[in-house]
Image 1 (cartoon, rainbow, N blue to C red):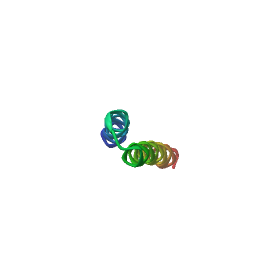
Image 2: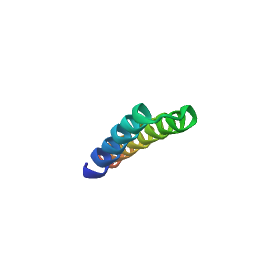
Image 3: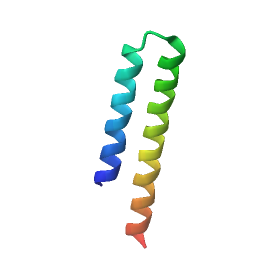
Length: 54
């Protein structure tokens, strides 16, 4: 589960970068990146659970 944890950490980093960004476009891009990281982590988590069921 280390990979999922790492991706969630990257989402936190992207959110912090969005909060610090002076440019609204960059802030929005960082927020979108954080959302994408979270979605990826969730997908990985679900796929891992499916593998365990088999």
